[in-house]
Structure formats: structure tokens, C-alpha cells
Image (cartoon, rainbow, N blue to C red; front, side, top):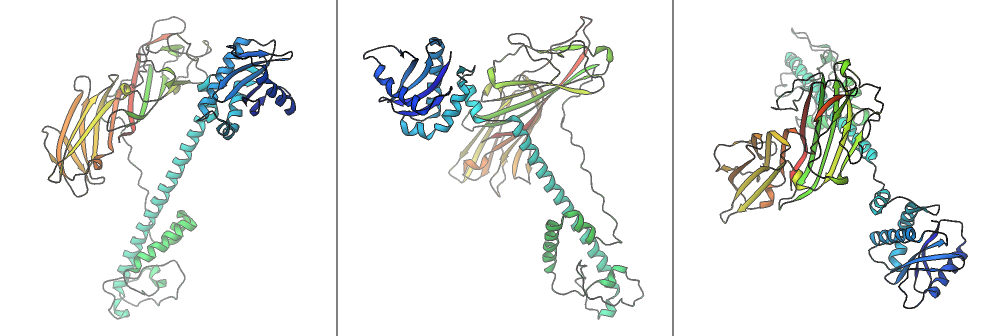
Length: 527
């Protein structure tokens, strides 16, 4: 097929939008469109007409015509299918198929036309692919944005840490100055009780050293006399904070620190245990680690507002004799369609359509690296399938006439592919109000930082899959109890990804393997 042009015109043959895929002058295409309505026979059911040079394949579009101008040797069945795709794209991108709306969306429509036909030949695309191409959504760009935001957050945390370090050094200097000031009170007249000189960075007239029995530090010799009340300590802190912002925390910290003040060590953060009470797995010679993270927003009335699951699989081989292997993944129990996307390592073969999922190297003669973990597979799911939500939360506040609210919280395990440990459900509380718990045998605490009730459940499994909590608290605004936040660490895979078997490529005895599948939460909310 050779498509010469794709056009939209009025019933009278006036061109509204036209895209030529072969060199054609504007006068030529306007003359072809002007003669097109005259060629349409009355009371005809056909969707194509021909002249001596070209063929018109057309379709009514409300008060307009959308048509393809092709050569006479073109395959008319393929032309009709291409025309239908053009019509669907126009209907999808324009709210109404009138002349004004099409001219308003002309730039986007021309871009879509170029994705359907290139150099006169049909591209193998459908409506969803054209829509995805026009959106120009880039996963790599999103990753770069996340990395940039993380770097910015780390820089802010580093600035705060250095500011706290500077404040500690300032307080230490103030204490030392207070000691030296008490020793020299007889020289200054004995009126120094209640406050002490604060060292400053700026140049000032020097004060003679006090001649007392106790030796004064060297820094006190250049301490200026104190001027003002104790409230000026806050303004000095503000000035130091401005210097920190203007000159950088490291430079100001070095200049303001006294020579005699020992450096304050940077407290290293304690390592966090992301596994919680999740049982540990004894690693075999072939060890597979599966990690998933879920971000989900559940609606309080029911249903899923948004859900994203990201996972990766890492393979670690410790025995060189077992480096030539392949992994067999279980058959999917749920049809995710195109919502579940996989991405393999460049050296790992892609999944064959319609066959079992196998993780193996493209070159069977090569071996997996020994002694180091290798990320062989990643996957991502974005959708609203409520059956994949691991834990459903039902928060039901009921305001009473006496100014209190009775709140019922219920959870239930929905996805049996996972077992949840260390579940914490956090319910916001009204300001100044504290709950009266009605339910017995439940573990809860009041979080003073967020003023929320944190309900802790050690284990949620197929055996103990549900539970309820009931309490009464002052307040009659039901919306104050949202959003409910949930956190847990789980065993298994939300997407049903695992390893059924590990076999040698050369057909030898199957090696013993171990799998450690962990699920963690990001933003798990009920809004």
C-alpha cells in the first residue's frame, strides 16, 4: 500500500487538515480534495471512489469527511483498516469532530498521523501505542527526577546536620566563656551574674586580660564586652544561620570553632533492620533474593485509587560448578495483561511468548558470576486490581450527638501470596483528644510525634487473616481520621513472582537452591 495523503475535509471539499506522505504541492492536494465530493455517488454504500490517477478511501466524521488518498495499486483492505485507525485517533484526541476542534488539535493530530504512516507505508502500531508515543513518557526520565530529588533531600539533611553541629560548638564556647567570666568578676565589678559573654566572629576592640588567681583561657582575651539582654542570643543564632546559608556550612563551622574546642564527632546513624521479625533464610549455593515494594492509595469508600508494585530478582552463585544454570518461574495465577512489565539484564534472554518463564543467559556457554549478586530480572505493575492489594483496611468513624466519635477499624488479608509481619496501622486522632479502647487483647500505642493511634499486629497470614479494633474519642469530624497509614514487612510476592526450579544447562543433577522473597511498603494509605 502507498498512502499519498491523509486528510480531513468538509462536505464541500474544503481542506481542514491534511498530511502528505509523498511530495505534493498545496495546489494539487486542494484540487484533489475539492473534486472529491463530486465523485461520491448518491445513495451509495461504498467507502471508496477512484479517478484515473488516485483512489479515495473515505469515512464520514459527523459533518466532515476523513479520507486517505492512495494510488490505485494499493491494497484497499489495508487502506480501510488504516482509515479506521485514523478515525479512532481523531475521535480519541478531539472532544468533538468539528472544524474548530480539529484545527485546535492540529499539531497533535499531525504528529499522530506520522506515527501511523511513514513514507506512505503503514506502521505496525495500534491506538494505545500511538497514545503512549504522543505522551512521551520516559521511565529513565522519572528515575533521573527521583535521583535528583533524593540528592536535594540529602543536601538539605547535610546542611541541617552541620547547623546542629555548629550550634553545639557555639553552646560549648558559651559554657567555656561563662567559666572564664566568673573567674574575672572582681575585675569587672561583680555585676556579671545571670549572663556571660558570647564569643563573636567579627572584629571588635580587645578587652584587657583580667588579673585574677585563676588563669583565663586565651580566647577570653579577645572577647568583647557583652552588650544587650539575653534575648539577643536568638538574633546571633539567626546571623550564624545566615552565614551558614551564604558561605556554606563547612566554612562557617571551621571559622567559628575555637582552637581549644575539640571537634565533635559525627554520630553515625545506626543500621536499620528492614526485615523486622521476618524469619531469616539459610543461603544455599544458589541463592535467589526477591524484593518488592508497594505503593498504594485505597479509597475509604472502597476500591483502589492507584497502586504500583516494583520488584527485582537477584541471583548469587557461590559454587563455580553451579554457574551454568537456568531458573524456572511459576506459571502466573493472575492474568495481568500488559499492566505487568518485565525487564531483563542485557545478558539474560527475554521471556518467550506463550511459554513458561525461564531466566537464563542468552549465550548458554557463558556462566553466571560467582560470589556476587547479579540483578537478573525487574518488574513493575501499575493498575487498580483490588485482588492484588495485600491488606484491605476498612475505617468507619461514626460521630455521636454527644461530641464523640466511635471508630471501627478492620483489616483483612486479600492477597494470599504474601504473609505479613510487623503490621502497624496508624489512625490520626483529633488534636487534644485521646482514645478509649473498647476492644480487648490488642496491642496499640499513642504516637506523640504524629498524635496518632498505632495499632500493631505481629502476624497476618491465611490462618489469622483479619482483625478489628474499636475505640471512642472526642470529636465529631469523620475526615480527621484519614489518611490511615499502613506499614509491614512480608514474605512472598504480590505479583506472584518466584522460582519453581533451578536446573543445569547441561542437564546434570538439579542443584539445591534457596529463595528469600521480601515485600516492603512505601506509601500505603487509605484516603
